[in-house]
Amino acid sequence: MYTVKKLLVISFVVLTYLKPVQAQQITFPQSFQCGESFFNGMEIFNIPKKVSEEIGMNQNPGVMTTEKGIRYFLKPGTSIEGIDAVYYEVYQDRIHDDKYAGVYVLQFKSKQAMVPVLTGLTTQDYVAYMIVDNYLIMVWRSASKNTAETIKSVYDHFRQKLGVELYEVKPEQQKQDTVAVVKQEQSDAGVVDPSYYVELGFGNVETSIIDKEDALILNNRISALQRQYGVEVAFQQLHPDDTQEWDEERKEFYASHLVWTFEERIKNNVVIMFDKESGKCWIFYGTHNKQRFKGLTLAMQDNFEHHYKTIGAEKAMEVVLSVIEQVYKK
Image 1 (cartoon, rainbow, N blue to C red):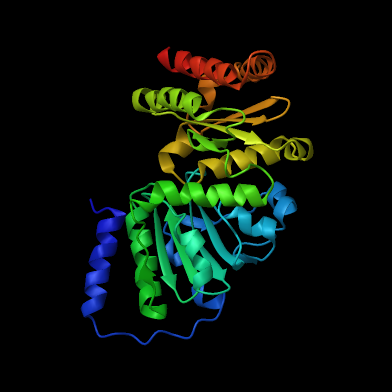
Image 2 (tube, helix red, strand yellow):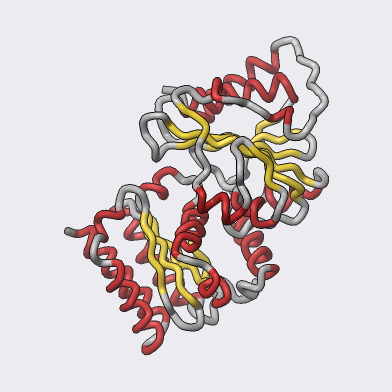
């Protein structure tokens, strides 16, 4: 079975030796429209009312130009400075309603403005990145027998029509550049001072809450959980203003952004978000492991808050990690 990467390499070689096709002049967003024919077995996704009200996404396909709307399509922490708009088409599997696919096209003010976003990209098995002029194209589809073929067909289409090129993430950029972008973005938002920041799993916490030595110990436990049970964990601090303004659906929406489009993480994750001042906690799970924690979440949240207030953040996090471990040991 061909992987997405192998099929794209084959397409690149074949198309390179074919007679070149004159790329069309780009008109945004019309030049990037695909349609259901590229997504076998799928149909246009109906935008949930909550999302529509939250960010103004009233149609699909569509274009978002507001700051809140643009952030919706990007990994948490990605700088949106220099992005004018995002064109999107989102599809849902006709049989499996937890499987999705789509095309996102980011329009930048200039080619130079693309650099911070490009250097913050990470390799994902079911996503392909393409660039042309001042546009970044992201094509993705949940894991299925059609995933590789879908992405290949869209790539072939855009390469012949617009002359797009594949953008491959450099392995060395994934860690340090992504962290740098996250730090700057969070600093701009008033969430965290970039000089005082550590990663905990796939979340972010200030070193005023967890120092680097404690973070190393916690991350060792988090890594062990992933190795042994396949569950990915994130601790993510929230600004007090956000915890007051966001309802439960908005918090869950933010947790899903932390998870992003990593297929295995979507299925099997635990996201622990907390108010950095009060310690109040909210916990969310993946599509496949939510039932494991049925009846436990409220107690886990209360215990986190109690230990956060009385002993400290490190102990609060250790308690939650211990519960996760016990759940998976059963």
